Amino acid sequence: MTSKQTFAGKGAPQAREHIDSEWKWKLVDMYASDDEWEKDFAHVERLLEELESFRGTLGESAQTLLRWLRFADNLNILMGKVGSYAYRRYDEDTTNPTYQALTDRVRSQHAKLSASTAWVVPELLHIPEQRVQEFLDAEKALALYEHHLDEILRMKPFTLAPREEELLALSLEATSAPATLFSMFNDADIRFGSIVDEDGNDVEVTKGRYIQLQESTDRRVRHDAYAALYGAYSAWRNTLAGMLNAQIKREIFYSRARGYESTQHMALFEDNIPGEVYDNVISTVNESLKPLHRAMELRRSLLGLDTVRPWDLYVPLLPEAHVSVGWEEACSMVEQALHVLGPDYSRDLGQGLHGGWVDVYENIGKASGAYSAWTYGSHPFVLMNYTNTLKDMFTLAHEMGHSMHSYYTWKHQPPVYGGYTIFCAEVASTCNEVLLVHHLLAERPERELQLQLLLHYIDTIRGTVYNQALFAEFEQHVHREAEAGHPLTVAIMNEIMRELYIRYYGPAFGMDDDFAMNWSRIPHFYRSFYVFQYVTGLSAAVAIVESLLSGGEEALQRYLAFLKSGSSRYSMDLLRDAGVDMSGREAIAATARLMDTLLDRVESLL
Image (cartoon, rainbow, N blue to C red; front, side, top):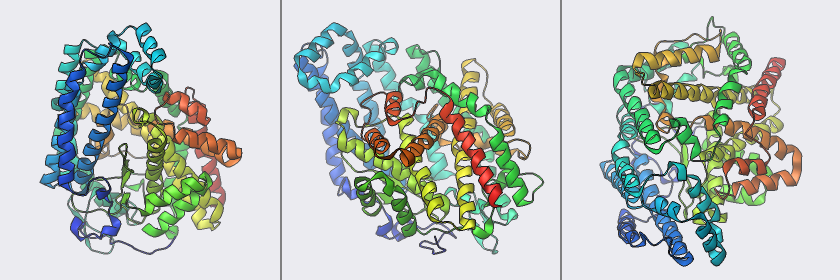
């Protein structure tokens, strides 16, 4: 780890055309040109017309049912590829009207698919279960789809009549407006202005640069960056509250239309996750807040502050040990850390890191944050906004965990099981992060770096377990308030978030009025009841890594089998096979205890 810079991190972001192709993903691996994409888009349109010929025939024979299932597989593969290309192009520059139009066409096409196939599940559910079993017995090729059919049958209590399903499907495009508007506002339109950095230079505050500014040793710079970002969101407080309120009412509408007990029940039932898993996250974390309070007190003490304020949460506690990690070095470190996963994994990981999977640096209009996206039949694509920090290196390891999970699912599962649930998704990504920590702690004995890594691990648990549990509790609270018919004003949402931060972060933390607006900038709140899975994902990953490092070949093969399983079984069962049971509270409690152990090690080194 060095101070080498591979990309200028100060000043205004560059236009995309000024960034070298070496740092860009290769979307030509999907389509050589937009014209090629147009051909497949048109092909999808023809298939959408063709699928109507299957209506009313699915219960006729085993062969007809098999033809439909194979047709649906092919249609979904093609639509996935068309959609992935459009959204990746859009995320390269969200201000580009060409790709705004492409994504809008894709959204319309997906809405058309939903409306055109609204009859399918009701028709399948109308086939007597005994007849479905007879089909399975008569046609061996249908055995592949047995779990898929079981998933459909499980949805029977919440599936409506064909016409009602069609109406709900027709409504999807219109009711996606809150999430679409938030994305356009959050990624394309909002601006935070500029501040003066520690060297006296004007620096534009962007989401990609915000954490970098928050890591400044100059508290004035941190405060100014914080005020610029949160002040911008606060200025739009009523609009943002309206967007989130509309999103929550959207979920209430669909949950009540289908007869679910609540929006939470609807979100968890889709992946067959018991409701107590969500409740366990909130209750277990609330019973384990002392390590977080201890971490905040350590931060207050090391920074020499009376109170830790929101703009003090990301500054390195040991600024003299600040680590800058260039892109090439980060790739090398990640490859070394994941060598424990075997030669095949190492080979495929290297192909991803160096073969056009990753879009590395921020540019004007680029989507914020980081993600891994994929579609069946194509290698994954990773969006980064890399700024040469230790945190960015861990983000890279995280997103490559998603990518390798996706890649192995594609390689080893048929299209019908070619995805995986979010509940499983965060396991592979956080396993990579934990393995990277273990590798660096073992290989780099320097006291300063050891402290930096331990503190990073503590912050990872804070961000992935405690922060996400806080968000999950906020989400549960506001949904329940709305379901009870209570208004969700800015003041109410701010008060809920304020109380959560005070309770979670403890007496060493000093709340700020604008920080209570943090709900307004969380994209995951537009994907209801998503964030709790970060908590379960890291907790499962900690348990799996412990078994990988102590259990030898058997543990490795269990984990690799998990990566290759896609959605061929239910998520809870796949994780049990990988060696961790998430139906209880122990894995989450153990992760909180790990934070205490890490704090002990930090205090010992200090």
